[in-house]
Structure formats: structure tokens, C-alpha cells
Length: 328
Image 1: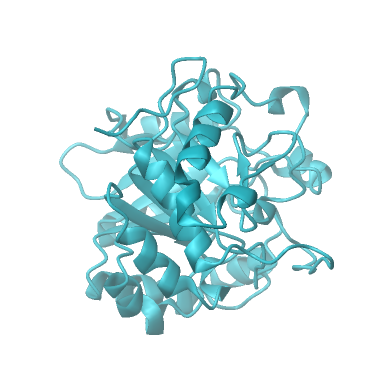
Image 2: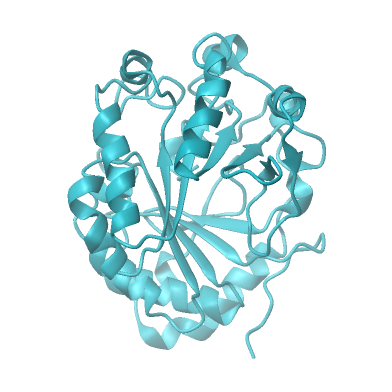
């Protein structure tokens, strides 16, 4: 029987967000407005074998859900090999990926065949002009076509991620509602997160999740019970109607109380919190299969030290320069 991965505050961790690269080809205004800039002198990303050893250790500790993130994970040449390796790991029951939809139309069938059966696709506007202004790319139709292709490929769980920003796209709530109901999709509204690179943008455009929730409730949407293994989103539905909307409100009271996730960067650093002060390097314990016992023990010991909450309310984003650096 697998162990349970817990911290000193009684939280159980079943979900790993694994970054495959910090590279991204979009220039989203809230994350990388000036585009990705490659740093020199950094170690290479984890190899497929190193990744397999990492996931095996987490699975031993009872973790059963893995999400591949970035940057943009589809830019990683070994993506399919990594996906197959993770999906084949004993104990892993769900493999998901978050993507900006780049080349999703042509790759959706390959993703499904590799074991990726859940996708979150970033769609920050349904207006082509706004979408291009936010992301730096005129690709809305391409992304929406990719979502349709993913459904045809048999990817059974598809969610849209949208960062709702005051004065930019907060007037699209009703349009998003109509879209998810028309296509019977799930949508996540995510609060703008303050990082070390975007404090001015955050001040101008942050929209509290409680405001979005109030608008949904006024339109007849009701909150739903939290599902096993789900993230911190509070989900809403309108009784008897298709579509589901979730709100990830990082600045809400007790947001961290239900935390069930850990993060590992593309280069093998364990981040106990997206907004923590630093990552802890696991790579020295990923060199060979016979290191599984010390690796498992190291992960369990570090997880036990996880802080009770982030410090965003105090304006402290930790060591996170932008969301692509760890895999928000």
C-alpha cells in the first residue's frame, strides 16, 4: 500500500505539477509581456529517465495525478516520451496537461495516444482582437479548433483557463458563459497573480475572485461540492444546464487550506509553493534507479516542512519572477 504524502498542517498531497520547460512562445501581458528570454548557464531540463524516476518516487508516496506544465509544454521535443513514461508509472491514474493550444489541432491525437486524457487550454478572450492583444498572437481560431480536435481525439476532460483582468477582459463574463454552455465545457477563471515581474500590472488589473463569484451567483450559478483530487477551484453550475465554471481565487481567505499539490521545475527543483522562496534540488537523487528509497524519503521530509500559506496578501511573491518560471 502506498504511503500518504502529508505536511505538518494535515494536508494530503496527491497532485504534482511537473514543468517540462520554462520556454513559452506566447507573450501574455500578465506573465511574459516581453516574451521569453533564455538564460545562459542553466542546467539542462530533466531527461525522460530522470523524469520517470521522479514520478515513480511520488507515486510511491500516494500521488496519483500529474499535470504537465511549462512555460509551454508542447515546445519540449520529448513531450510524448515523457507523457508515455508518466502515464505508464504504476499508481498514476490521471495525466493532464496545461497548454496555450499551440499546434493542438495537429497533435491532439498524439497526446491522447500518449496517455494525456485531460487538457487545460488557456483562452483569455473570445474576441480575436483582445486575444491577440493579451497573448501577442492572432491565434484564437487556431486554439478553438484545437479544442474541438482534442474532443474528437478522445480527450475526455477539457477545461478552458482564463485570467480575468479588470479593464481588459472582465466585460466578457457573459460571453464565456454562453460559450461553455454552448459547447458543454468547463472553464476556470483565475485571479491575476502578483509576481516579481508584474507588480504594476497586478495593481491596475487584479479582479478579486469574490467579485466574479458574486456575478455568477446573480446569474443563477450555484457552487458545487469539491471532487477528489481537484485543485483549489470553487466550481459552479446552473442546475439542469450544461457547462461548469470554476474560480481560482488565490487571494481569498483560507485559499491554501485545501492545497493538495506540489511542483517540480523543469530542472528538477521541488517547489512546495508556487510563491515560495526557493526550490530544493532533487536532481542528485535522480541519477539511477537504485536511489528510489533516498529520493522518496527526501520528498516526504521536505513536504512535511511546507508552510501553511503563501504570503501574497503581504505583497510577497517569494522567488517567482513570472508564472512560466515554475509552471503556475
